Image (cartoon, rainbow, N blue to C red; front, top):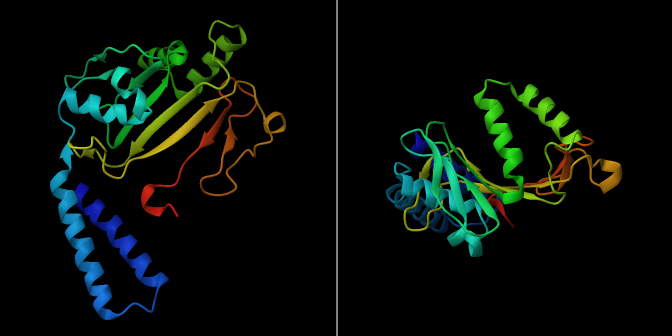
Length: 226
């Protein structure tokens, strides 16, 4: 199934390219088709399952700024299903690895000052609280200053539908980055940002006026960047 998804994506790219330039010759189109086919085959043989703790660490670190990866702390579920520290760190970042028991891929990197807030969310979820209950509880705890979020603290999310990666680069097939900049209690009026994205790749403010108000920035996938 993973290979089928990858093939569909590349086929879509090929069709788009062909439709945008009708003047291409049959020879050139045939050459392009051959190149893409060979590329898909090459990628399929490169991508491997994330099936070891080492692979979990390597792929999770792709969520962190490149220059900081070597000294990031990595936490998350290991292959045995235990929530542990997968890698000790010494800088300002904590990286949450992908959960191997869940479909797709999702890793996150955030400033260590956000850990109490993140840990509280994990604890409430483990206690069986719903998303709405977790939101309400942390809202109350933020208002009482039991919890704190530093305005401007950033969450880097590396995510995708594919759970396969390239062992040579640690990149996950089809994964991309998204950024969240926390600004508790901020609104559209206080920031000048819209409450919904006006176009792809444009920042906007989500959960305005709440403890979880944040700027959303979703870069375009690499394959569609201009």
